[in-house]
Length: 206
Image 1 (cartoon, rainbow, N blue to C red):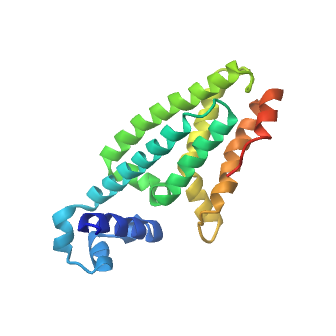
Image 2: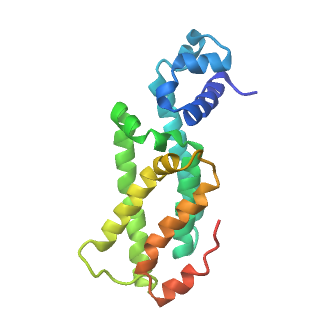
Image 3: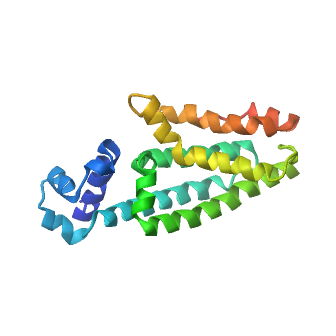
């Protein structure tokens, strides 16, 4: 049987995803569950406590997905699988990306953790680029910090693609992930060697 604490988390996630942070308070969550706000406050005193709990679940889910994927062979399929896992996990907790700036402004703990996590992800992705260069999949840099800036473009895209999708489309559905995932992969295409292009054409698309 699901505990009250778990029910609060699941209810909050549903409400945050469907209505956005601005419209969801502790009272909103309590009313949706049919419990008193006092009962909810026993488990989570502030809305930020719930948001932090959800954020750390998202990070845990991403880490779990990454751990499975990183056993794969270095190459474009690995790059695709990493991007796909991050985007699919982000969709399940999509309010973070839809209200990204608000979360970072209002919660210093999440902001610090996210910045630290971004540095780790930067090292992982640039490390993957370097290994693909050594393996002849990607060409060598032609401009100063060329691959660092490629990573930064991918990072910015990853942080804000969902907000852009919500503006352009009437409703965000899971099937849009494939479209935006292809945008990320095509951003890498101009940097590929002949070997890399052959590998790109053999990617097992989600």
